[in-house]
Image 1 (cartoon, rainbow, N blue to C red):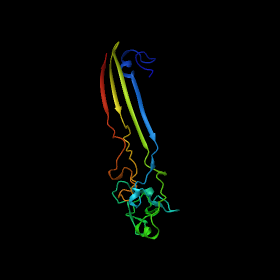
Image 2 (image 1 turned 90 degrees about the vertical axis):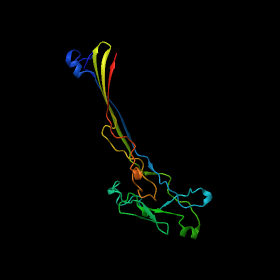
Image 3 (image 1 turned 180 degrees about the horizontal axis):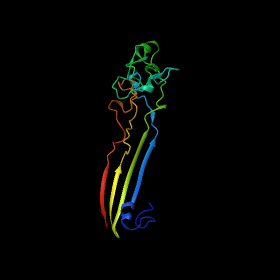
Image 4 (image 1 turned 30 degrees about the horizontal axis):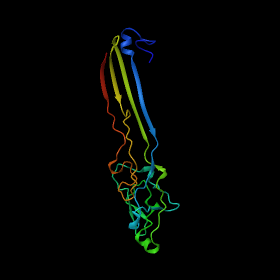
Length: 204
């Protein structure tokens, strides 16, 4: 600031009390979302600890044709149901993921034919990410000098100033009714709602 006591402008009189001593600070965070993890495992022999993964059918897109119009808050079942041949079908038309892209490589009918196999689904899908983190915190401070060495300090803290809702990670459980929903069934968010805090301090 260039206004107020000891500054270039409005350094004396009533103007210095009203227009001087203001400070503005902020902490902003902009972060890309984390890669998606499909966090369910395919059927596997007991001795393996259940670490066989699903497969993705070649040439079939992972995202649903309805992904661009996916409604995360309308309560529709966006999960998938397994077919006897190890493929999947969608439980509703409101889907983010294309259930037809996944394969349970160790469905009972397939194991009977050729035994257990490892799926080809990666541990993480870097091309599909959870929502990014966007947040702005601001603080406004006004210092009003009374006498030399004494002043009143008014401060307004504004965390999450624009009241953004940053949803947590995408539900990667293919069996879940909220498969593909950021924040899962609880629609969890990572940042707190905007709450203003005002403090007044006498400094001497």
